Amino acid sequence: MKLYKNIGMRETRSGFGDALLKLGKENTKIVALCADLTNSLSMTKFSKLFPYRFFQIGISEANMMGIAAGLTIGNYIPFTGTFANFATARVYDQIRQSIVYSKKNVKICASHSGISLGEDGATHQSLEDIGMMKMLPGLVVINTCDYNQTYAATIAISKYIGPVYLRFGRPAVPNFTSEKKLFKIGKAIIINRGEDVTIVSTGHLVWESLEAAKFLKKEGISCEVINIHTIKPLDEESILKSVKKTKCIITAEEHNYWGGLGESVARLLSLNYPCSQEIVAVNDTFGESGKPFELMKKYSLDKETIIKKVKKVMKKKKCIKMVF
Image (cartoon, rainbow, N blue to C red; front, side):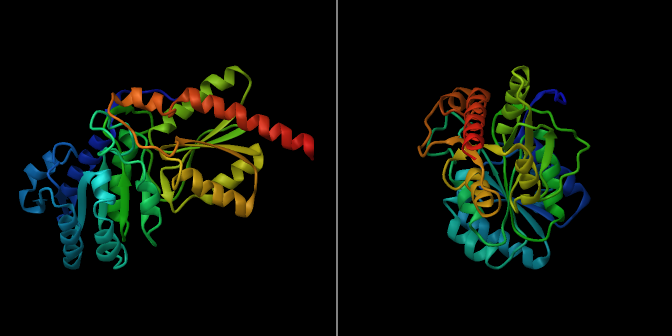
């Protein structure tokens, strides 16, 4: 198993902010809009260096999306910034009608996603956004795992022509991907080769999957870990190639059980290669207030749960072999 080292705890939102600043220096068509959360989205440096290309819209997210759509008409590349809950559920109509239906080149960048934003509680946590956004035709949906990948993804989406939803988080998490790794939209990253089980994970659960795979190796279980940073378009080829080898799969995400990565993978398998699957996700409930990693543990979004699910899916695979 290839060892992945945590080179330091960093916030994924800082990866977004640092990349946005770099883009601003390189391209005068890059503009940024924020809904009264400049510091929380790490957009402060951009706002100070490029005051005439930064628009503080205030607590008016729907208006922000409309303005962003309008700016694309002048060939500007707008990056909007707010919390994931406010970037999706609150403004779904404006995103659908003004941005995605019209194929506007807007980058919808959402911080504080999932449950790990913590103490703000259920009203601010977003566990439905991936499902909502992947339903919109032609919208790219990206969910990054660490600082380096968020930085690389922000650079990559600036070059992509079309609407994108970029999802990242609030807390400092292990930064373990290479800063030299190019980000390819729609191309999964196999970060650990294995033979016994496929673990497909996204966002903060990628690191937990690697930690689980490290533990399971000691028990003689070889895990293939795939980083699905792009939920849509899904890298179907990489997933199918892996499960045809391992014959079983785990999906892991910081999102509701319904509508997320797990369902996308289930659909793919049912149509192409039915096999045993287990899903690590929030089980159809809202979150609550608490410290981020306490909540991750309470809602079973951790390596311990992944380990249990791996063992469960391998038992199912063994039973199927016995039947046939």
